Length: 175
Image (cartoon, rainbow, N blue to C red; front, side, top):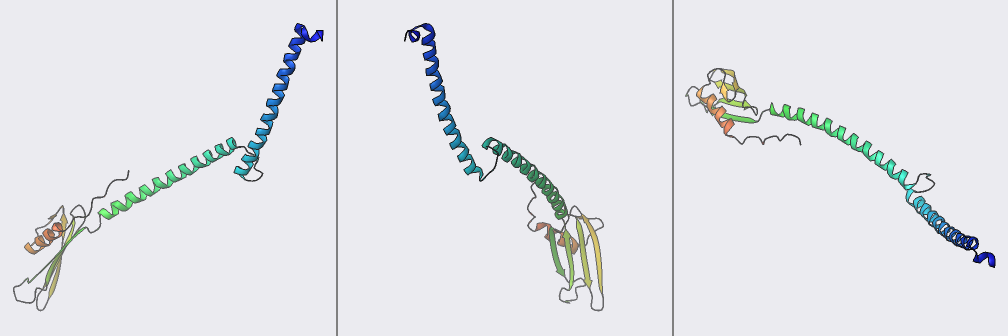
């Protein structure tokens, strides 16, 4: 017992106590680690050798790949949408029809002028002039709401009726 009361003995007793405490901490840590591994297997499903950190890193990598794919698809769709919007701007957006009696013969207003214009107010005016024994068809190009060659009053009326109609909704640029 004298050996335990000496400095060397006291240091040995303290070292044993520290070793026992370290052993107890190691046992508790091992038990918790086993529970954690069991919980990870339950979350990851089955016999996946990866831990949660590796699994999270893999999920992050897959998410980034998915994000890049979605961004690529969105860019291609934006391009296709821009092309479609451009094509739509060149379609008929305004139309106007005027019926009249070209020869004042009381023939039932069989002559017609129709204006077909796009969103830039350009297009054509078609006029069909009917007489008792003949019919004639005329086409005139319209640019920005005005005929390239002089329009008849009925053709001007058809353009006016077309442009007085409800304009198409503006196309918003993609965000």
